[in-house]
Length: 232
Image 1 (cartoon, rainbow, N blue to C red):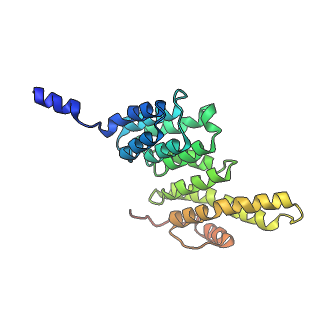
Image 2: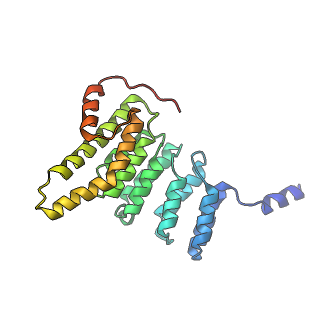
Image 3: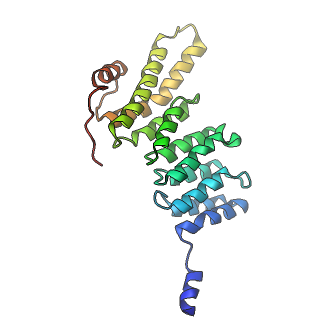
């Protein structure tokens, strides 16, 4: 019995025990160590206790978290299997110091990618309308992970993306060239969101094309039809 207790004490920390070590490393200013620990944690789809601890760390204002640590933390949370934890992630959008940061909103998109919670889809739709183009692109990437979801979910995401995609393309092509600032703004938005949105629409619809008018035509023709279920 004594030998068993000794082995337990000396055993390396399991995934469920590593977030406190990440926090300790950050408080000591050891960013490289914190990143290594996060890499060891890996994906937390099924480790809900560790995932909840990681969200708590992200939310905390008691420990300084460099951008690379924030990015690694959100990536570890991708595809969370727990609705409770998913809602804790979504709640980060209400935390003033966090919701203003692009990196946090982009990270939330990544964390919600493929989440089993229906409220994750609602949040992704909301983030597709974010004022920051990089957040929009990240939300589109997250939407693509729902290609195996039921019809209604795929259509909701597709419709939202397609509307923004076609609208951005129209703006880029119709804004008066003399309005240089507005013209450049429209071109920049298109450059940032185009590929992410095209890929998401291709994944959600199982159709390969990259022409905005053709996407609009395809949607009008197929929006009321049953889309073929895709198998993982």
